[in-house]
Image (cartoon, rainbow, N blue to C red; front, side):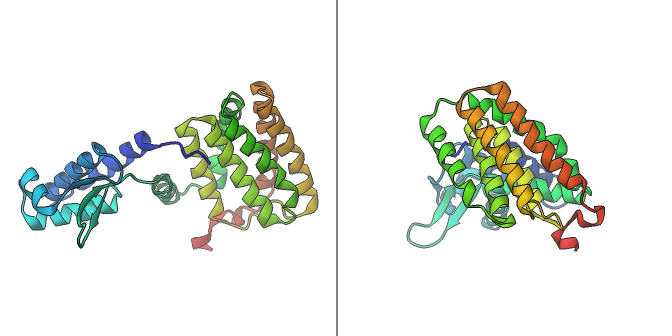
Length: 257
C-alpha cells in the first residue's frame, strides 16, 4: 500500500512538545539543544548520518552531558536515532504517524473524550470517499477491488471489524490527503481501545454492512464522487446507530474497565 507522508503535521506536533520542554524549569538549555537536534534531523534525509558526538559538540557549542541529555529528548520524540559501535553516531529520523496518533489519543482520553465525541471527525471520511473516487492511481484502484474481494471471508465480528478498519484506512490513503489519513487512523485507533462495543456481532449486521461496503467501493471505482460520499455517509450513519444503542457504561477505555 502507498504510504503518504504526514511529516508536516508531525513536525508541528513534535516541535510543539519540544517547545514545552524548552520552558520547563531547569531544562531550558537541554531542551533548546534537543530542538536544534530535531531541526538538524529535519534538514537531512531520513536515516542519514548527521554527525558524531564530538562533531555535534563543536557544532552546538555545549558540554557532553548537555548534548547527551538533549539527545535523549530528541530520541524520545523520534526525531533522531543514536547508534553505538563501529557505525555509531547521530542519525536523522522521522516520527511515524502512529506516534502522532498515540499522542493525540492520550490527550483526548485525559480530556474525558469518548467514542461518541469522535463523530465530528467523520466528515473527513466522507471527504476521503470523494477524493478517492478521483484517484487515477491504477495500483491503488486495483488494490481496492482486491480488498473488497476479501470481505466475503469475514464471517465473524473480529474479522469484519478488521476489514472495516483496513477499508477505511485504504480509502484514506487513496484520497491522497495526509490530514485525512491521520484523522482516519486516529479515530480507528481510538475506537479500538473501547470496551463493550461489539459491532458486527450478528450475521444480520454483517450482511447489512456488506451492502454498504460494496456500494461504496463501486462508487469510488466508478469515479462518482457524489455517490461515494452518499454511501460513506450511509455507512457511518449505520455505525452511529449501533454505537448510540450501546449502554453508556460500556463506552469506556479498556484501561478503565
